[in-house]
Length: 219
Image (cartoon, rainbow, N blue to C red; front, side):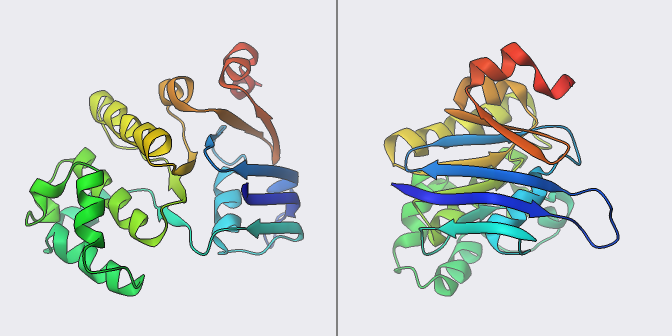
């Protein structure tokens, strides 16, 4: 089943003469683990904003066959460190917003391996632990389709590897379809089932092996 279908998307920001997206199409099926890859400014973030409904395409259509998309934004460590709130309080408020059941927060915390930290302040957690909390929060909204914006940014190599191991576990064992913007080439090679390679607004879908053989990010 297709959870997400993007058809012939085109978009140009106001004041720009160069399109951010040029005739981009993509189908995301249940069980996919898709990474959006490419150099800065190539259209990845624009596409993610379009999927989330933050911006409308100039031409083309976005069809999302899931009631909500769980979204993990790029983390802001400084802001999170200064926020005086516990893990449970973060999830409790979001669970109410998503109309999730009273046990949902505990369930997603256990799923991401953070149940023991329910009473910890967000600011006392490591970068990798905070990222797990953000993933848990996203799962409260939607357990079918998880969208992430560079989840390994700011993490050391081990923490980044651990986060992608978690995402792969969610994908394989819990049936969560993953779509993530990513620059971490190791994460790309080890985890993705498909790569969407961006260059100057265009996008090509390929296998991880083809992505590394062709090295389109060097074009």
